[in-house]
Image (cartoon, rainbow, N blue to C red):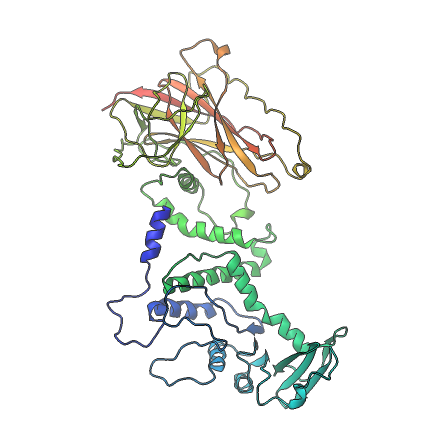
Length: 545
């Protein structure tokens, strides 16, 4: 999917039917109510929380128009349709959030804590630990007198079911907590005299804040002026984080990856969700990077959660059978002079494009920069180009392209040795802590209008330095030329490194010849990695229909 198409879908995404919306509806969440109810009803079914749970507010950033957008210390959750105005809305919020819980300890801050809430939770077999406001009329006066008390001192007050503590954290700082879990004046920190109630509160209170930090680190939120969409993005973020918590709960589920990074997990979930749709695609994307990803997923086995724990196979993919769509095609290709045809695949007519198409050309073996619009096909040198959009085809000759990973029949000439890597310049000290680039795996994939060179690595080695560029070499095996001494490998291009897999396009080549290709990586310190296994392709002339 292109970025433009993604933006179009995002702008048109809605979660309700405006035509069936009830007139005068008092539900301010009606635009996303169905999705919200489905999401909230499913969450309790998938996870059993521990004894300690935390209830706190979570703000969703939004700058558009919204009828209930507000910032209030007393978190307001809205009025039910047809009901009177609520009193003590913080208490009703906590009771709604803990409706299905039994035997847990609820931790909340001063915006929610009250004696009435503590009594109601006790009737539900739930304990409460929370900060309480200094202005609460039910607090004893001696707990509020903090000026004459020493730092790190504590004062307790008890009833049959409630415990109050006043802790002087520093001069003029009086911390007040209410608990129905603790019934003894225990001190947990002898150095600072911190009560056990304060330690338990600090241990659980930061849960929602930690969730907020995790959501900000890896978020799918996008800028939008539609508040249901902003809320939907937050639901997706929270769902991904919940799934990650479940995945890391049992260490036996990922024994070879410690710790299992959240970013890698999110990438894997996204890839698993889109892979079935990618495999059903009828057309390939025109971007070389996106097309390379599509080809890699089509050739690979069905992805499973935990692919980072499995050893990647380096077995090259089999050639596509005649009459079937080539598995490894990665990009819509074009050639200036001829219409290229893949064996067993029908010719595809490319519709003309009105605006000019950007073309990035890789220099040919003679070292000159060229493009299909200005240069004719060289009789000896192939041309590699990366196309962002297909060019207009000309109805001249057509050619058939076949590829293989081994030399073709009738080719008895041995390949010349690959070029040696030049000595790197003086390496900085930090280069000693990293390894040279990995050996890539190259594939030559026929497409409807040309050949695609795509490469990737079997398994990412995180000890290797970052790759700066990839260097492409070609060997033109001219079967009509008997002088093998004059034939050698030539550098045909240098491509700046992008996230793997990468791909480039062969658009101009000589018919009736065999071409061999190889690629190697160069890291940011100037070190070269090993060449890939050379791959070859045949170009055979055929008559245009």
